[in-house]
Length: 432
Image: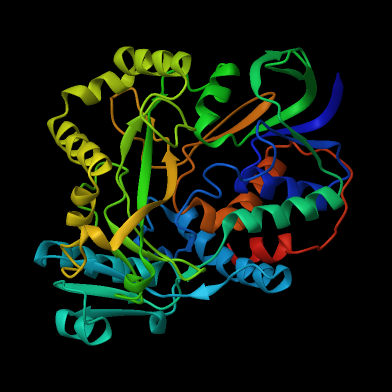
């Protein structure tokens, strides 16, 4: 059994970033526990790889995420140059199909200004202006954001891991957490193979499994979660540049955390379209609809008995699910969604599937999707739950804000050091 001052559960982009800040600021015995063979094996690599500008985030309800995304932009760019990670400016068109959606764009322009995006980086375009820019795009109007970038968050996470490891973090791979025993002064983390470590304090950044980990600490027991796989199709090379700008569309179902259809320009020159949102039983069911039988039975039992059961009586949710499931089974149904704003594309332009990722929204006791990050703590743990898009974009700054909170709460009573490796902690806080 190994003993640590701090154990971070989850080697995704957030957990790895927190480990970097802690190891650069403190002389602390620190480990990151990850069930896979390396960092960033799930959502941190399985995403659109877009560095987002937070013009679409409500500054009143999403202030921290918006600020994190804005500050992190320059941090990612500097790391990309240092580590030779792809950094391809694609820009993005956020399009409205009708007048009602156009009102959302007008609101987004106000939000963008309030969130600190320079005015010269956002333009509100009418249909003719969009057509001049992208002749194959049909819409009512659009916001053109010049800042959007295509990158590789998995590569970024691996670079942060290298720096954190040099600074003293021990990465423990291939260990899945089975149980957590709370002792008087620390916690024992027990793995599937019955090996274990103890830690004075645990930071839970386990992504799609973060709610399960929090509940091992006796927290968030009134919440449940459900997993949705989003799938994409890759455009054949001869059709990849039919539109040269990344395109997102104003959300049709604002009450649900589903991504409306988009056209994604990747750093490697490929183009992907999607996604759908298909219910699956686990955060790792990247293919098929069942996955591991034991996990499936357990998860669907939870859905039928927990908060998610209330979703089954929501007509809008059921309508949305039926459409999304169809677009997973049928490539034609998927492409039909994109044809609303790129009429020229056809199903035969897409011959293979692309990225498949899973989102795990948390469901409140009222049977609604939780719209924001949930941070919960007790004497031995700090838990970050429901950390979703634009989580990867904002991870460097958001993780620094988490460390600042832990400082203010008195959880980091360790000898301090100050090592500026890839980023400056004080610089992040000065921009907050």
